[in-house]
Image (tube, rainbow, N blue to C red):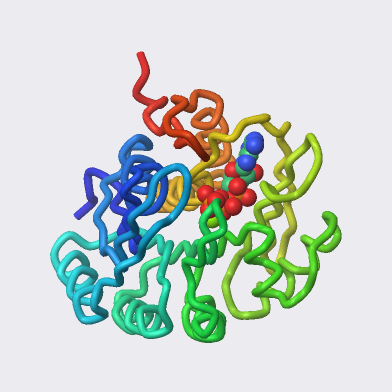
Length: 265
Ligand SMILES: Nc1ncnc2c1ncn2[C@@H]1O[C@H](COP(=O)(O)OP(=O)(O)OP(=O)(O)O)[C@@H](O)[C@H]1O
Ligand SMILES: [Mg+2]
């Protein structure tokens, strides 16, 4: 039976500030016309100024959320964000594997303010267990430096790093250039057949809390709605760009985006 709405299962951490994490993901999927379900891996106590506490959800309960959602509601894509622990990554991988659903993996390691959202001892498990299952992985520059084990100073380095990450076994890499210097901002989409550049002018703003979460969720929604990957990426970048431009100026730090701009009359 054809589903009325594209379904996206979001696996990640809760952001009490509402801008990133599961809350940002939920808004993104909803505002792009999808149906979002969630499996929460950790609670964070945070606002626009930073992450002040993390409480992990027990692994067995993460697995219960995923299984119950997939057994009944199902999903057209799965998007993972903050996974925090080695054991959480393992349980997520084991639980989703039998369902064989395309996975968009945002390899979240640090919050905008610098807080660690992935424990250092979990990096190898992320590389060896979950990344090989991904249809797409969306690292930012510091994450790509850890995954490819190299420094990234320019676009050539971005392409090299994306190729190294591709060899970990995922089908595609979108290396995000938000953390590079300069007025233009380049994201690189790399597959085994193709390399594509997405270029935009940088918006001068501090309201970029949750851009990475919104981008990956928007791509997962596009794939669930059967857009080809380059089109899902292009639409997601346009969506995030407008969400930054219309950011509501909330909080004293890195403010959230305007996720609901698609609903404006
Ligand atoms: N100032 C900006 N102007 C325009 N686009 C931006 C800006 N900052 C980020 N982006 C875009 O937002 C998307 C997310 O990129 P970024 O590198 O910020 O991810 P991230 O570091 O993972 O974000 P987060 O900190 O939310 O996890 C990319 O497509 C990037 O090009
Ligand atoms: Mg990110």
